[in-house]
Length: 507
Image 1 (cartoon, rainbow, N blue to C red):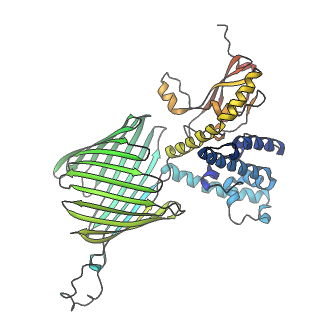
Image 2 (cartoon, rainbow, N blue to C red):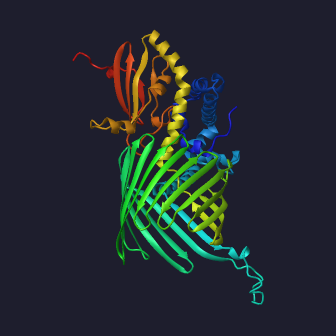
């Protein structure tokens, strides 16, 4: 019944933590943990299609972990290589019987590669290469006028513009990030470049601010300030003000964007821009798993236009996309169509044909180094997976609580996991702490809760709400009708109930 798991799931799960067993666990301990989780996640126990699908994914993940750890050979490789070692090409049975020295040498090589990947993730590199090719002569030739000119039998296709950009990010603290970016552009023989430095600070869960400094050979120094703020859970505003210094003097600019989530996949935008190119713009963007649709209208100086575009996303391994757009305004009409495809793990190659009146025909080729998933995206994905696991636990937790109440046993009243703050700001605490009452109650057996010496983030129903920061687990529980409380470090082993956890109510 178990199916192959995705590479992301293999990378993000710790098998020992998932099964809640020690790294030295015996076969009997592994089997007991496996059976317990199989009973919890078995797909046949759920009739709702969504819950059944979530249960099947978690069931397969548990099965995969047990298959690896229950076999002495694969477990030995997993302990040294990690999950990626099990997927490496050429790992036949004979090759797995290496000496400890050979395994250690290979492990050190993999460790160096892992550090390189971590460095790339911290710097979050993103680059774009765009090439414009003028292909007008393919469609609009003057054969009669130039029929005697040498070489006129072949259409003339030329590169008329090119753009290269690159950016990296460097986290300074948990709330501060430095961003360095640069670009080079050339068009019809004229070119230039620019470099920008920005410092971003997350001020709260609802907003952040960014200071920007830039310079280039086509334009003078630039100083800017950008502010972002969530007004409501469905509405946010962004303001960007800048001062551009040039030979003509100081040019101020101000851009304000108000956005609102119209539904789960649709966002509406209102934009007002004042400065060199003042304009008002309204747009609606709908982004789903299989498509991306945009409609926009702008009134401004010097450009006013209407735009409609559609992109279809194929659900294949290469992430193929085809797109088309129509843009009409005072400058004329432009129709553009094209496609892009993933060519490596972090790179995408795309091409588009642009047909316009009066601009002619051009071909754009773009190679984009995709930005790695940010920490926020990872947390959101893990949060969704944890919430799915908690929904599957509800029925089991109800039965466990009934059984524990009947014997005056162990009841988890409240449990929180994450970074606890010392001040009285409850808002800050909620940002970094998650409720894990249900997942912990689900692990209670015979009025006992035993957590191994490993990060709690890998437990079913848990996720890491503050990656890279020190975390604790705080548990308020009731045993034999008496309240107890304990706080443990993230990787600290925990056994409850204990007499030392009892809350003294005499005072």
